[in-house]
Amino acid sequence: MFVRFGKSSNGSPPKRRTVLTVPEMDWIVELLEHYLQEVRPRFDPGGHAALWVTERRGRLSKRSASEAFETVRELAGLPSELDLHALRHSYITHLVKFDYPERFVSEQVGHAYASTTAIYTGVSDEYRNRLLERSLRERHGDLWEDPR
Image (cartoon, rainbow, N blue to C red; front, top):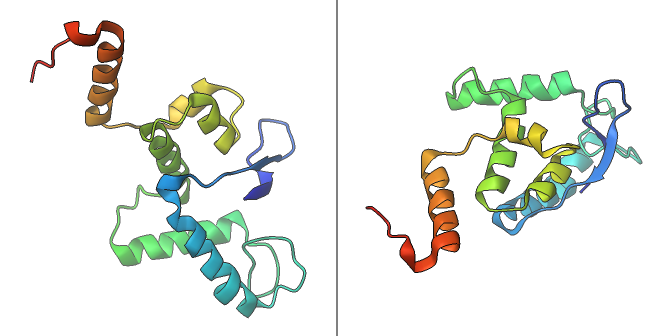
């Protein structure tokens, strides 16, 4: 997917980038196809370039997207701390857990530095343990023994 107006850095214009689908999240392709073929045409967007449009044929605003997310969140009974931006954090965390390289993850979300991306990640203790175990095995081979 080509993002024309992605998140910008302080004082910079929005960043353009390509966001790739990864095999672990390939379900999104079918969802987007359904939206593009069945839902979006009902808004009669004409030649509007935006993916997410309103019933007035305009680009969906961040505020409208957040309000729609809040409505769905409440209907689903999810905690109020969960906001639309939390999905970005979740996406980054999943890419890290799937073992994608740091640079790939940073590029996917438009970060210039891996340290910025690291702020977004919230991996579980179980994942940290697996990562540590893998590193120990790679470094020490057969000398390392799992204490469990």
